[in-house]
Length: 398
Image 1 (cartoon, rainbow, N blue to C red):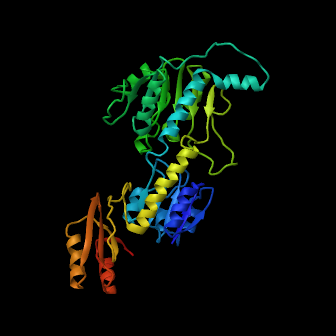
Image 2: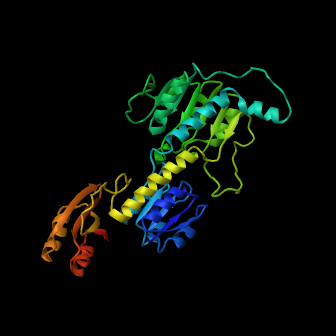
Image 3: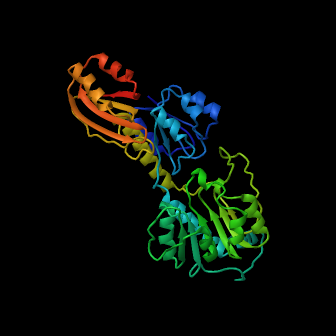
């Protein structure tokens, strides 16, 4: 079996997949749609990060593909509906780089508040400017967090340890941590915040979340940070509000269009502005986070291939069945309709095949059954199970 890992995925993932018996092919860059579709025949596992787009057309061109591992938080670069329809499992790392993003956010808040970008630029130009003008402490200032998920909630806790007041806004009902206060609307948050930091997910509803109206509502002299998705803000509007002086500074880590690999030119309307920190989508790019992500997603892919375990899959029913000695495992992904298990077991009973262990889970339109049977069974069993009209995908695991 083969695994194709793109975008410089951590070696820990390579080790785990090779230990599971896979031949691992690595590439440092992402691939375009046509290149990816051409590379996938004969590949059972695909590992990507945020730049590679796995569309329905790409999935349709990959008949051997069993699973996709997103070695990052988001999965909006993958057509999950198409993957589910083909029985392709998708895994991600929802927690592994949370701390890295939080620390970068706080570092940038401090750098902007102290105007370290200006001081650094002046020093490199040979100018000694020891003035405190425009430099402030973060203590006592109000941080507004838009999106109170794993990252937003942890940022809330750590920011309070720095002495900041925290308000947050989320469309979902979230429990406030520490002394954080929930705002009933985004308007309320913008009016109250000295610093606004976005940490929303990549769902389509968040497209153009922040634009002219929202920037105008921010406090004069406030700071703005976006470390979540490039398409959630209007970059042209942000530039206008920075140039006018309405905003005192900004930090942006994600962009509408990003180079696919190192060395390609980076283009943005935000380039060249003072007190603006631009980083190349490195929120989760620490050695610690990448090692954790490699281990987490790599292990999930290895377990799925060897045992059929789908724990923490983002699109399949989540199952994990312990090993049964002296048996083969049938991993059966099927349409979630009544009577499937009865039909599976009827086929097994017809051929005198004993069930040693069995587990079923459903999720939306899909069902997933793991069934351990004795190693002696006729080939007709597999053929009949594959021919069931409800079958999406069947694998036999030793």
